[in-house]
Image (cartoon, rainbow, N blue to C red; front, side, top):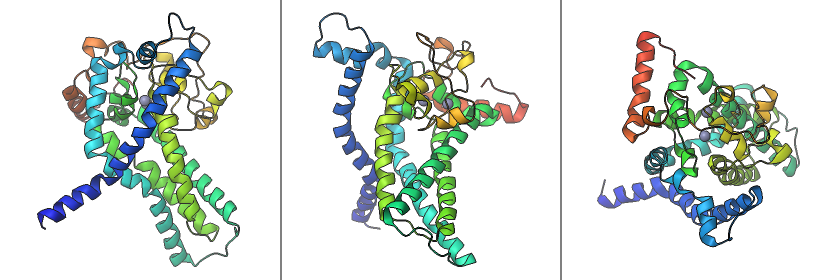
Length: 326
Ligand SMILES: [Zn+2]
Ligand SMILES: [Zn+2]
């Protein structure tokens, strides 16, 4: 392999990440503006309305200049550099999994007569089946991370966050990031493959475009916003789609909030399976894991603790059967 080839493969590896980062260049100013405007509407604004005041409101120093936030930021940068290309490729390959699963079933059992003949209906059905099944599996994987003691060791680092900023979205232990994020794409893709076979159809290019567009919107509007420090509510839509306030509460350290609002995109699953918690008017909470592991006692207050501690507790649990505090 020549130096040129090595360089080419490095560039190819980072291409999807660079593309997403360049989307940030457009998304970020929009994001800042929307947060600032939402803040003005959600609060009774006091004092002069200057640009500086708005920036302070959207990015308060106590949130961003906090040990917890520094861990989020460094881990986020490391994951974006190392892990994002890999996970991105696998997540997008959910559609390829669907395609292959459909082709496999066709070869094994013989092709079925096509039941959907119009393009728009085919795109709608394929998109809905894929989107709903991936999000459904995502909800259950997240829920099990809270209820199964061993999985909790891997997900707990996300919940030792004591501040919320968009960086907190990337506050995931590498094992969780690599190991669990691909599960929804695998199962959602396989299920979509079964539907493709049963309806005698193949992946429609329009479906790929719809999934890609939705993934982009979901990333900015749902994922990034769900880690904003402001409890922004979507009103009655909170029962259907994840509003910032709903995931904000998922990060609460108050015991009666534990294991609630496990949605990735649709809170509809929380509503259906009894884990929905609509915050009451004026209800407040602190962010973190529990009272014992807070502040100076937070096991993940440094990047080293954040990376090493889950391995230690996981291993101790396997050896001694010790149950953690979910
Ligand atoms: Zn969680
Ligand atoms: Zn979160």
